[in-house]
Length: 100
Image (cartoon, rainbow, N blue to C red):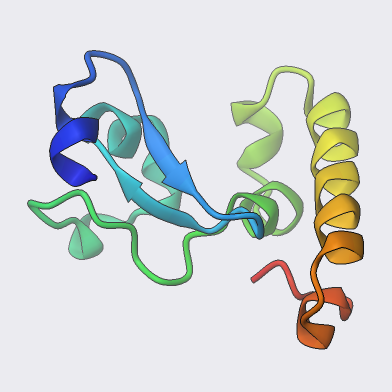
C-alpha cells in the first residue's frame, strides 16, 4: 500500500472509517504537518497511531485555519462518524469519543 501511495504525485493518504490516518505519502505528510510533529516523522510515511482527522478537526485550533470552510467540514465529519457508528456492530465504536 505504501509503495502505491508513494507513486502518487499529489497528497495521498489511507484512512479507516474512524478517520484514523493509516498511511500517507510524503506530500500527504507535508499537507498534514500539524498532525505530525518533526520528532514523529518516519521514512515510510506511516501515520503515528494517534493521527485522526476528526480529533484534529475538533480539538486542534489550527484546524480552523487549515480548513477554509471549517463548519462545512465539521458537519460532514460528524455525519460520516454517525453513519459509521450506525453501521458498525462494535459497541465501542458507537460510544461518544470513539473517533480516536
